Image 1 (cartoon, helix red, strand yellow):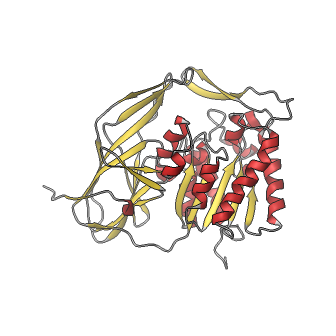
Image 2 (cartoon, rainbow, N blue to C red):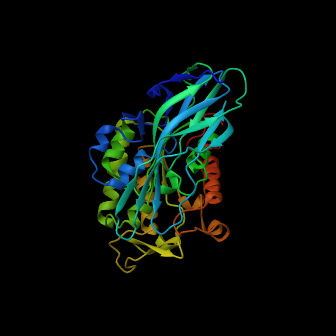
Image 3 (cartoon, one colour):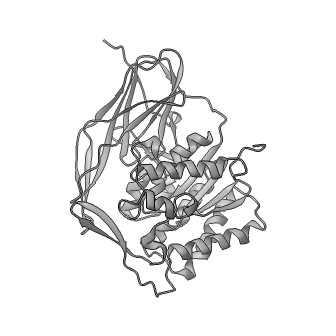
Length: 386
């Protein structure tokens, strides 16, 4: 029989979260601070920022068995077969060492046609990892990137302590659902997580599905978050939500970057445009979702002749121009065309299953290419001397 040691889940054990909320069950990691959460009425963003993409428990221990009690909330869409349950990935001394699922949990059902939401309450569950290697080691448990997860209790068969600062650089990234991890097979397989592992950096992932929208409260949250490297990936959500016209876009981008520079005046800052998305390259939003035989596909329904509205081609032209203009006085500001991460040849080989989101193989390719272009020799995030 295992002699378990129960350790309260405290903020000192969490990485990748900007805030921690106390709940009736335990603690809930957030990827936006409380002040920001007071400034948006959109339940979609509330759901997305509470899904802990990039958030992980990190501790040092001699334990060979670990249990984590959780209450997770799985999101399903009416008429679409549910995806597998969210995975918890185990790393030991930085290397993959296991993957597990939690039982129980709540289910949030969304009807895309009516936007109605139903919640079915469920019991907490337990994630178990056994047969860890003996001896002192650094352990990370990456939380499911697409399931809101309350952390209730951590049990181990040896004491745990917080991991000292590794001295690794902190990379703060903001983007859309592709950055959040749609279609990733596990939390360490989102493209930012893959790129961070290759770049040897600590990730804070502020990729919010459907919500990379130049919101000022996001810029302020990033401004106030310590970071050594910053990237913002912009375009697809602004287009497919038909959120703003061309007239508003450039000033909004300038304002977002101005806010970032208030807190990070010389930090390497990379602006990334959208990867290739044929349905939105030259056709503005809004986007529409179709269900065909239980498969979700998106299409753009805007008027291509309306030059006041954003397309991905317009967004890329504007972002390239804005960065070039600002870089004259800001040598640490850089631009990356998202089609260098996933372009026409990639679409031919690895098409977008729903016409917007890459599949798992496409996400891996994006992560590898971002690591090469950003962290590789000569890249904006390269270590000096590389």
